[in-house]
Structures are given as C-alpha cells and as structure tokens.
Image (cartoon, rainbow, N blue to C red):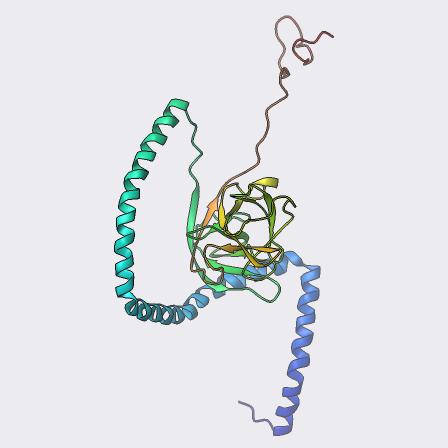
Length: 303
C-alpha cells in the first residue's frame, strides 16, 4: 500500500463526493441515451445480487421466527381453547359445504357447464423489498427455467399484491398495488359499485371515481372488475376502510410490508374477441366449379 500524507488523504476525501456526483450524472445521461442497455445491465446486476439478498435476509428471518415462537408459547393456552371452539364450528360447516358441493356438481352437470381452464402458476420467495420513496416493489427469486413474463399477476395466500414488471434469468421485480403509478378497476361486493383503486405509496390504496350515489361501505370486500383488459375479474384484494370521513381506502388481506411468499399466475390473454356480425357470410378464397364465389352479403337482403 502506497503511504500518503495527511494532506493528500484529506484532499482525496474532499474529492469523493464530487466524483460520485459526476458519475451519477454520467449514468443518468447514459440511461437517457441508451435505455435498453441500462435496463439490461440493471437486470444482470439484480440477478447477480439476488442470492446475496437471500443470504442477508436469512438471519433476519431466523430472528423473526424466534420472536414469533416466543409469542406463540405465551399465548398457547388461549389459542388452544379458541382452536377447539373453531374446530367444532368447522366440523358443522364441513358437512354443509360437502352438501353444497354435491348440489353444485349436480346442477352443473344438468346445465352442461363449461368450466374455466386451469391456471398455471409458480411460487416464489421474496428476497428483498426494493421500495423507495417514489415507488413500491419487491424482488423475488425464480428458477433458471422459469416461465414468468412481464404483466403476469402476483398473489399472496389471500389476494392480489401486484404485477410483474421486469424479469431476469433468476429473479423478477413485482410492482405492488400501492405504488403511486398503480390504477386498477375494482368492484365493491355490497354496494355493487365500480371504482378505481389508486396507489399513493402508502400501505392502503385509495378508492376514487366511484358513483356519488353509491359510496363504499365500511368493511365490504373489494375485487378486481376486469374492465379494460388490465386484470381478470373477481380476484380478491381486501376490504373497504375509512381513514377519515370521505376518504375510503382498501386494506389488503395481508399487509404489503410483510410479504414472504407470492404466487405468480399466468392468466393468459383476457381479451374476449367477439364473433362476426349476425347473418354475415364468411367470404371464401376458393372458386367452385360454376365460377367465382359471389361477394359476401347479408342474409335475407336483396341487392
């Protein structure tokens, strides 16, 4: 190591901040000139650092689990009593549910019900909260041969949490529903009203643009509406809560700052393509033996 005098060390220390400022400006200019290159470089860095995030997070998970275990031991007696009561109630509801399942199956068979196609999904572990002051997102680790693509829907065990925005070789970034750029059409269960759920970087997204004659009701469920081909309809999100009069928000079923495991679903293409107009003849490209096929016309219409 080259020995340096105190004056030289002090001079170098003063130059560190200007040097970092110049480097930051150069990176910003390069990002404006070559955005594709910067995005690819960022994904490569994210893939490289993803295992490191997992190693750093592991001790915190161990401590978090140990603290939860101590709390569970303290409350085990009360929880055991409550679980016994819940078990009795669930046994009663189990028989009711089995009867409804049989009835539902019988009715579907009589109606020749066409079921929806089975959805494919992958389960991923959250390794880092990459949220900042101006955005809310998480980073998940994936296998090398994953099938995750941007735009797919991310859910926890209870409901919607966000959508995939960036995908690397071994990781993916998920933009959460409380991000400031998130706007999702939703439907309210009791009032049957439509609204827009808008993120504002807080834990609870706001409800805006709902009908004046159908105000959200405290505690009612919020699900996706499926309008605009943004998200499939019927995905649960949370319930309505009023932080103060006239300011309804959506409280997610699981706090967005405590995500550990998420499932990424491939809903495919949501757009429904309508068939041709009623009564219109589909033109043919082939010729029959009697000559060329006439141009398509509306059935029942004289030319």
